[in-house]
Image 1 (cartoon, one colour):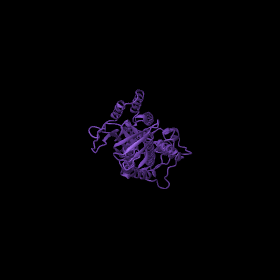
Image 2 (cartoon, rainbow, N blue to C red; image 1 turned 120 degrees about the vertical axis):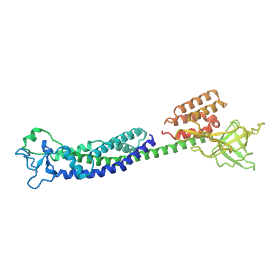
Image 3 (cartoon, rainbow, N blue to C red; image 1 turned 30 degrees about the vertical axis):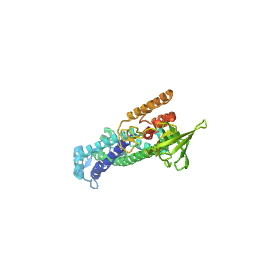
Image 4 (spheres, rainbow, N blue to C red; image 1 turned 135 degrees about the vertical axis):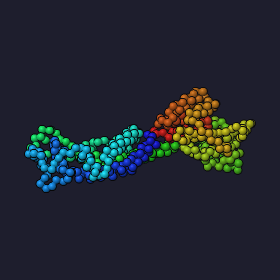
Length: 433
């Protein structure tokens, strides 16, 4: 679901309610009052030409001159009764209400058309209900889909009025032979007013449900993001879980968990009291112990969803050549951000170098790092294939699964892929399951 588009639809619905409806409803009340006055002069019968008969000058007929629907015009045309044209009836309603009926109808029809378009656009954005197996979500969706902005309510009102004013008995042969019923002009305007009131009520409910839908999706996605963030961090900790021993220069020791690969040691124990010159010991399966000297602690602050950790530069104490800590040796941490899935490259030294590159370049740089690593050829091909699959599924709900598959394969080269994990984990957290 495009949350930005749904928010835009909500804004447009709110604007219609506050601007257009305020004018339309105010005029509608005037029209309704005018049609009620005109209705006092009406015959009260919807049978044939009876429906077109009004008392002269649209006045309420005096006592003794009320229209008799049973006899109608059978015994002659009743005194004071006439059949004004539609234009004359509209002119009287316009005179009483001081409302431009033609302009009001155009605005009313335009507003209804706009509401139908917004409702259709909102329905298109609703996620598949199988994605959210929640009765609350189902109710919100059902209420939105049940909304309608057509003339059905106006027609229903007219039908009720016609049935209420249908003559049960009539001896007026002219009206009977005409057949059927006729809708009086003033009742057609009353129906439009009732349709507008119903549309206003429907609009309020739709706006409320659209807000509920947006909030539900936001909360659900925030929950998914937090879950994915936790899962990503847990996977990294699982990959850096070898038992190690820190021997400090003052002779104290501390057991901790991490992973040594080549000249890099990664640990998520961010409070580890390590310093340059301290040593780290790792027991091997052959009961030998490797000893490493810490050349650079390489502390990395949190890059959500990756927590704070150390990326130490180390060397075996038996190595004769100490790698330089200066020059061109730079470790980059990639972090995706922004609406177009771009990421920053931040060097671990004290310089702050931000480079905006595209999502595709992230996967290309990851492949280059894997190809440059001294990994087994078969393992390298599997990792490259996994990167291609992540790239193909970026931005889709299936990306999280591809990311997990990649992580399962990458246990032997964790130090190579670690700089890319914040970006990959962020991509995984930004899509729905």
